[in-house]
Length: 120
Length: 107
Image (cartoon, rainbow over all chains, first blue to last red; front, top):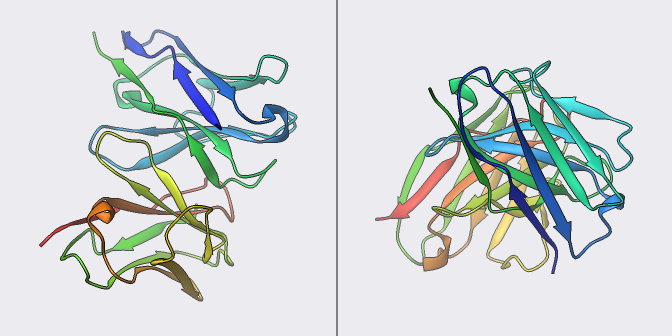
């Protein structure tokens, strides 16, 4: 079964950092682009960051550019999101998402999400 | 950035109804549009991509169509499992934007 599972969410103070991880299984991780998409509870979806299969192309939403860093380790079937200088508006569920292809930007398989709470 | 505008925001319907949700792009996105379904407390699920291609395992009562920058998701006969929120998403150009969602609830 194709599966992605997030971890690392929690409560963090404004200005601090947090690192999310995503463990993939059931598919050849290194063949696919991967993304982070977030959702404020009760609100809509926002693409946060994406990385192609070989890390050759990385992109960020304007709202997180310069503060968040997406990375992957194909040997470990893992995706990461380093979040620095967190703001209250970053509070959301963060979903790890498998792309439908190597660089298609269709969000094919979603994790269950991990909640990031930014509050003092 | 390409803005995606969905309508309506909320739709009340009954089991067996034909339901249509519209998504309009602020500029041409060719056919690079996907539709997702999200139920409360769950992750979104891909339904349709490239405007009209049904994802594996999605019931055939779901269909997608396009006309220039206007895209439509149709449920031919609404089933109890279909009450959910639906989102469109363009993947023509960064920043890979979503519509604001359409909630389909029980009439």
